[in-house]
Length: 305
Image (cartoon, rainbow, N blue to C red; front, side, top):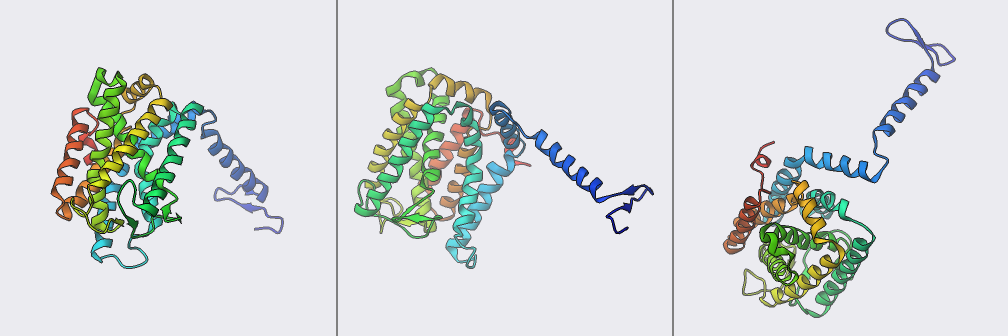
């Protein structure tokens, strides 16, 4: 190596620091050239990423999540790894990615506005619930699910809104042409959302995410489900205003992974409920799995890498 930064390569040719910088710059430019520079290109790129990693996202992550949550609840996992909020949030965001990527082509200013309304409602009703016990019954978070503001997780919409969207999409597939009727859609999706909470809340109480201080249904008071009827109706009306039903159907037909987040839900919360002996919630989770199977959305290939 000479003092001016020049050197000799393996084949005997001379190189300089400037040559190295040029090569590095070329590599960076090549990487930038591969990145999409249009919205359509970005959507296609993200579709490809999710499609190529379906097993990891829809099966591996919820399976690992179920094991770690059970391990945390049973005391098998030591601090600071037990119920680590950042690990929980990361896992949830990964499992949500097929739904987010699936909905992205449908997202415009109208959808963004109505989604903003739903996010505001989510924070408002949860804050009221934590302070007053209405409409879900008295409850409190037993662990922090990431940053908390006023006793409510900042990431709350990431936990709640996808549940409603998943129920909405599955019902559109199961209802077929009847899903064009707004009243039928409202009733069916609201019932599906409440059924998802029949799976979620007993499992979450069992692992210690939150507590109602006791309740008739696996530690959950029946009043909680009346509250979920209200929130489900608000959410369905909001989604109907934000998205064109026909456009959602077309995207569903073209996007085979759009309901993979619900596959993750069945594996994660179904498994947790089985472990803790919550057999009725586990059966409801199984029913969702059968619904996914009936609509060709539970791909058997997902069960193997």
